[in-house]
Amino acid sequence: MDSRLKLFTARVIARETGCPLWASAVDFRRTLSHIAFIPSKGVPTVALSERPWCYYNPDFAASATIRELVGLLTHEALHIVAARKED
Image (cartoon, rainbow, N blue to C red; front, side, top):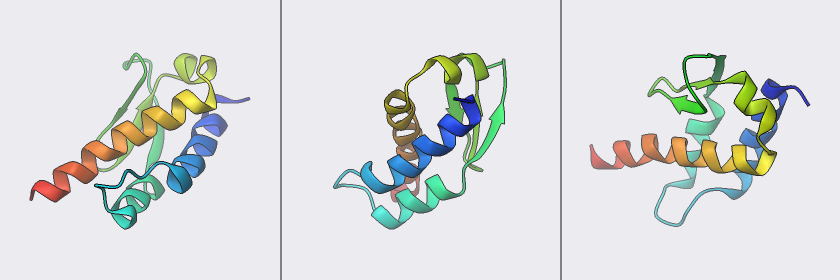
C-alpha cells in the first residue's frame, strides 16, 4: 500500500478509536481532520506541526503497519490538543 494512503487510513481509524478520556473528542477529531500530509526525508518517522502539517518519511511510512501509524498520529495529535488545553 502507498505510504500516503496508509497515513490517510491511519487518520480515519485514529479519529474513530483513538481519543483518550482526558482529551476533548471534538478537538481531537478536528485536529486529525485538518492534518495535511507532507513527505519529507528530513524526518526519521513523523512530525506534526501546529498548523497541523504532518511531515512524514515516505520510507518509514511504507514500512510501518497501519496500527503503528494510528499510534503515531494519535500521539502527535494529542500534543496539539494538550497544548490547547493549557492555554
